[in-house]
Length: 312
Image 1 (tube, rainbow, N blue to C red):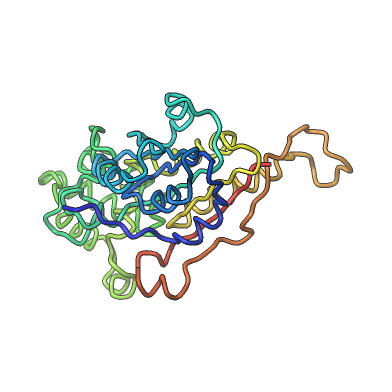
Image 2: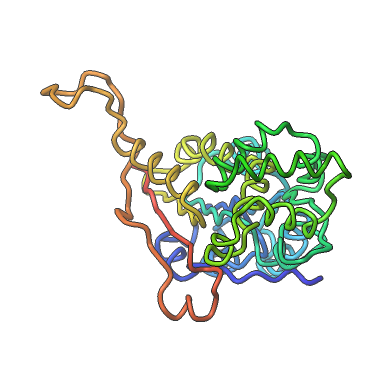
């Protein structure tokens, strides 16, 4: 299956990155290379681009797409949480811009074999971003305790029926292992009242999102990596992050704000005495959203939000 992914907020992201032709730029979620191509197009022979991704299909597709830019492009397989080590391994210690386009690519969603979709009944419960990882969503649904499943579905799926869904999953797997999206769909459907299912969108959407986030440690990685990525930036360098749900967006918003104003002194103190120093400024006071044209062309862009921070 060909790796296809429509890059969301493409023009806006490229504009906010403020690309210098001789700069060094990193895409920590390379995907099919859509954003990367536009970055590379703006670099001269002294510029450098490093792309990082966990998915071998993305690596192959991006490598082909970025091939015309030759040696100014370096592609690495890994998780952006290890960005500092990965960059040091190729002799880079500071950069002029970082981009993250979080979430699942269109290719991953559309390939039933990857197990990210709830719309294909026969799809395996996989959901691994990095298929070198042994743990799958199937392992989680069949081995995690009812309490663990409840917390995952409640915290990462924000589903008010999380407790009942977890209970139904544990009950069903006592009869036989849960193997496919279709089997899990039926279990979730039985756990949600009919009146809610009639108006609330696909009943499995939140649970599948929750399992994927937990399996791939998506929020943990974002939370633990953001400060370090800001530290990698040269003064004036920018980090642009595109999120697709409120949990990610909240983390980005809060950490950007904390890096801009890290002072922990009580508000009634006349001067700061904690010694915390600002690392820069938030460029986007409100998130940048897709325009009407992009929304019409790509329905998956509707939940996208772009936030930008500039190193001081």
